[in-house]
Length: 321
Image 1 (spheres, rainbow, N blue to C red):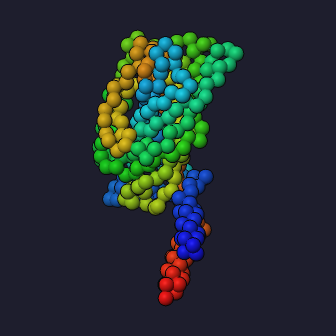
Image 2: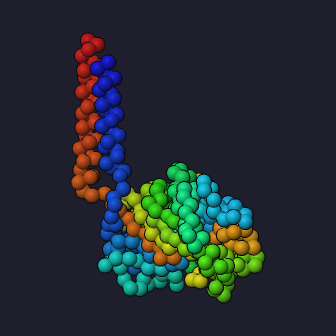
Image 3: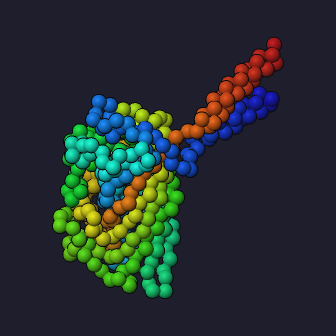
C-alpha cells in the first residue's frame, strides 16, 4: 500500500513536471531566425514572428448544398501560403533573395467543427468554429532554394526542405460572418488568374482566426533559437478573392500523408458546396520559447522525481529484508 501510494505520488509529480515543460507561453518571444539557412546570404535576424502573404484555404465538405454552413458540421481545412516578410524590431525591411531566389512556404491541414450559428436581424449569419484535437493535425513550413509556388495552380507549396512541423492544438477564436443577405452574391475571383468556380459567383463574408499550435520539430539551420514550445497564428478570412487568385489544387498533409485535392465548390462558392474556398490574409505567426525559470523548475522537478523513485525503491528493499 505504501509503495503504491509512493508510485502514485511520483506519477503525479511527473505529470506536473511535464505540464510545466509543455505549457505554451501566452506571448510572442524574440527568436533568432535565418531565412535562407546556414551558408545563405542572410544573417540570423532577431524577430518576433513570420509574416505570410495572402493565401488559400479550402474547407472540405463544410457546406450543405443550398444552405451553407450548418451547426455541427465537421470538415478538414487545407491551407497554403508563402512568406513575404519577417516581423519584429530586428527584422529587415527587405529580406535579400526572398521570393526571388528562394521561398518559404507553409501548408496546413486540420479538422474543425461548426460550434455556433447566430442569425442577426438583417439576416447575416455568424458561424463560430472549434478545432477537433488530433495528432494528425499538421502545419508544416518548407524552405526551397528556388521559387516554385504558384497560387493559381496551387503547386510548389511543399517543395524543398521541411524546416518546421507543428500540431494545431486549439482555436483560441475563429468566426465567419456571411453577409450575403445584405450584400448579395458577387464575383468569386477579382484577380486576373485562376478561377475554379463554374459561374464565378460567391457568397460574401469575412472573419478571423486565432490558432495555437504545438511545435513538434524545427531545423536548427533556420530556427537558431531552440527549443520552441508553441506558435500563435492570426489571420483574416474572406470569401472574395481580391488579393490572390483562388487555387485550383490543394496539398493535404493531414496525418503526415501528402495528397492532392481539387476544390469542389459548385456554381456558387459558399452555397453550392460541398467545399468552401476562402482567401486568408493578414497572416502572422509568432513563437514562444521556454522561460529560464520554467526550464529550471523542469530540471528540479525531474531531479526530485528521480530522488523520489530512488527512495521508493530503497524503502521497498528494506521492507523485503
